Length: 388
Image 1: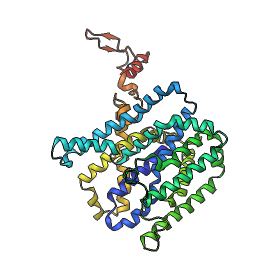
Image 2: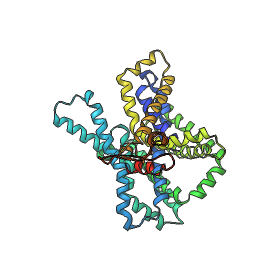
Image 3: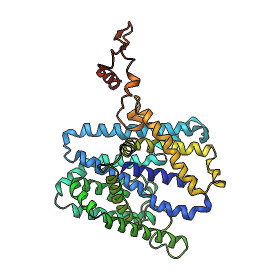
Image 4: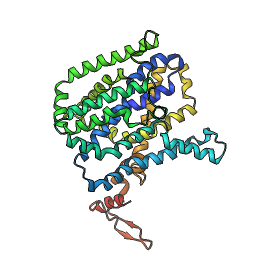
């Protein structure tokens, strides 16, 4: 599901960046549905975390929080600094003080897409209590899910129509309460994964049908508001409106079914390799893709709409972003910066890079340098790579 979700994130930001003003209505209609990528991100993250740590004990909290900080906190801080420096030439700060204030603001709110990590960090912070709640309410998870759904509807209404206090409205995107259904729902699904998997697979046609109906209903609400009929049910491409919740739930289920289909036994070796690479590199693509978008803006890519239809331009842009970010992620994953920059364990270099020509003997040098013996005993090469 991670590559599918990441394609949605990249597509959303591409539309926001490169769809021309004249196409704002049609672009907004696409964004209404593409915004589900954020809910999908939180659902998948909560589900995976709960599946791995459902039995988390208090004595393991120190290790749990440290691992979460390494996987999310450090990449967040690193990429906040990277984007700050990357945008420095166009930021036009008047002084060191104003520059530091800009950096602090980016760290507080999450530059562009990085606010996703602020939300998931909030979930990590309270996860021990969530895990305890799920254990204590075993057998009553339906009621917990219903309460989360009602809260999600209430939050969507209050956020969309600006009924919340000013501070909550200011940080609506960064507030974990704005995505409660998907965070709690992911945890509950992890507790019943086998049953949910069987039900979803057995009702695939129903899920696709209901999701299509929900998508049409969400688009109807959007166009009714756009053409001045009524905005009582929602309006614009704002992701915080109750009309989108049924579609979001259905789209997440459809994403799961697509993921199941992609890893189905019998798939070609090429398909398996693409899925594996997409899954491994999803985090890196998410973190780095706005750098590519910004570079394209600097190069005047948006003016290409004069010669290329904007939908085609956006499709080309999405392909270009993946063509840049996947090799970048694969490269960084083979360096000591793998975890802080792309959230992956360091990947060993290929044997042809780390192994000297056949027959070369082990040589010790005065400075401690070493060449490994031969292809007959590659274990030293692997150990050397892992030790960094």
